[in-house]
Image (cartoon, rainbow, N blue to C red):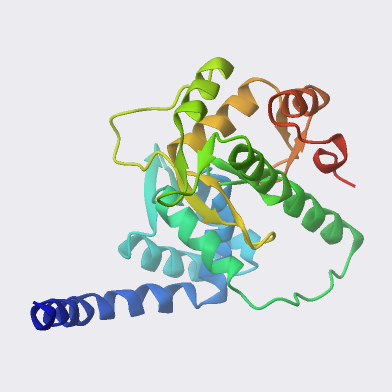
Length: 246
């Protein structure tokens, strides 16, 4: 049996190896990586907006975007004359976030005060596609684990107490989808997991709808509002100091 199992694994390696190498090569390009990082905000961008963001010509951006769409990392949406690009789904967002967290530490010092402020805001609290990340996202995950709302018995999972807690908050988690209920997504600034999956997305959506968090401009960064600080202190015991960006 062991020999059969090893043979099966060898065939799988041979079959999937080239595909893995193709995806790795795509994300190894700085411009394409910049596009994917920008699209972690969960919104659809035009090719012109992405080109401006990455500092490349429109024609160069189009070439890179076509490659990402062909690899099923991005999807294209058309509305009238406009063409929009977005990540192909939360699985791509989690891949990009996890790969970013594995990057060597020691990023260059920001060259301006505005860049430094943006970087601190993103590190403190941000969206990772459709769930919360950064210091606040990881703190929420840790607090849910400490309170027995999540557990690690078979990987990160939602407990019965956690499902009841979500119900009491009025958080509705969609069912009947192929998306995992709970996923651990490696946070690229904290280098530790934050809560993803359908539960993470539903909790993030509730936080926006309830006015616990608000976006900072057009970036992925979010601020925890006074209402949010009170709610997260009451429901999860998170201190104001942690929830307030310095």
